[in-house]
Image 1: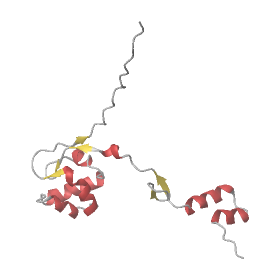
Image 2: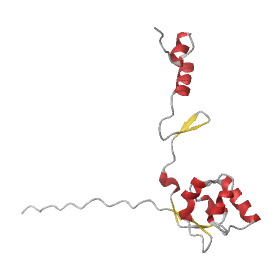
Image 3: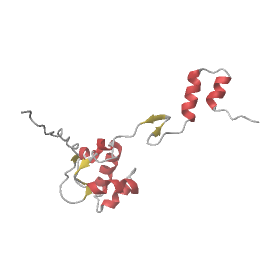
Image 4: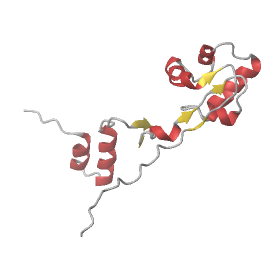
Length: 142
């Protein structure tokens, strides 16, 4: 009967250090749900409220700082948006998919925050107000 051994067990059995076996185990273990792999390093997902915004961005007039407030848009995508806008102004919000790094899924997430008319009003969403402690009625002793 053949026994299936894991990589760390095999490494320990041939005399490699526990550290080497632990490293192999980390590489062999599946990535837990909600965690992304980044060059072999796991990073926790970013909290949703970290990039929550209110308002809209006018794609043709917004500053780089305003564009960077959009969820999932960093400095690299801002540069691409500005380069595209400089070459030719946006005529529809859908043209944003022509920008490198922005696809249909990202456009769908950004759409509620995009416009081509009016001012840019985007700002970080304020955290939900914490409710005050409930008032408890007490009877006074007579």
